[in-house]
Image (cartoon, rainbow, N blue to C red):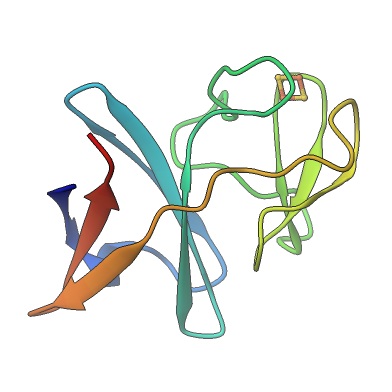
Length: 109
Ligand code: FES
């Protein structure tokens, strides 16, 4: 297990999302209701990153995570795919800790 410092949690906008590229790791976070949800940035449909526009991982309503490639939609809270070509699958949640205002991802290596 290794720990990646993703920077200040305050950099993730409330009701928005932020992408991270650290070494070979692609991750993204969503902040909703003050809670942070962290996932690997890999769509279960084809295994490619979800976003076309940097830091934009949500649908226009901000209620669901959306893959820009073929439109799969996922719940923010558990990454479960509720619509699109990978319905029933899920994003890989990444454990994290918050320390001194920074988000640290716990990555299996
Ligand atoms: S790669 Fe995400 S919906 Fe196809």
